[in-house]
Length: 318
Image (tube, rainbow, N blue to C red; front, side):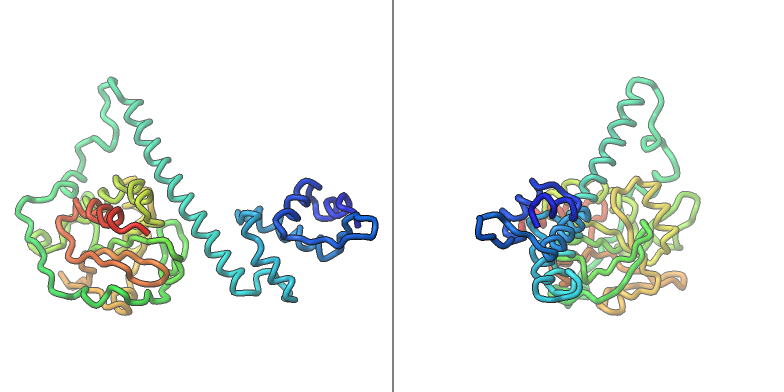
């Protein structure tokens, strides 16, 4: 068939077909008179390219799928190379989403500041509320000792553990791809009007979860620019509790919930008990390609920790 007929059947333009051909994605036969002759296989390939492109996969990166079909597979994603291309596309989209989310958070903050500038009305985030106690750390907090409880973690494979995030998605930490994922793990975040466990301030490394989260919020865009593909906070608190924290603190990233301590039990993360509650000790994992690349433990002071992670990322570029 002629190129115009191929374009009609595949639902595209002749210009697009010529572009695919220039990339070597389709290779029509040549008739004795020099005209290109396209077949039904070419129609299928062009349709596959268009379908993948609509999903966000660049035309230039559809080759593994087309080669899978050429190898005789029933589906273009039946081959390992196709699955790897899916993961790359997902990583790219995730990075773009998180970057846009950070920009959106900055725009909202700028809008609120501009709208209230000179009006005498203090924006919500600037009002003195019950959050003040959680945002301000006592000067005499005990410094946690490095007891070696995280020494075994660098180089460990990330378990195939599925955790729920505050967007309602299931996250597999072992399939997050080659981009760095920062997971800061903490005991629990306080909530205005809710008492913290007795003696909380005297437990080394316990106090400061809200300031730590605010630090990652404020440095979120910088962390992405320094090479972090994702940032997650993680605790044993349930998803509803975590969702309230995300909304109240204006976090531009999602939080993970691990109430069953699956990550602690599979990786051997340190935990502690207070008032009958088992809680995570504060530490941060940098994950890459299914492996623990870097560990921060102990973490202190928590309100400066995001800057510590940022400094490490900038000093260890990929």
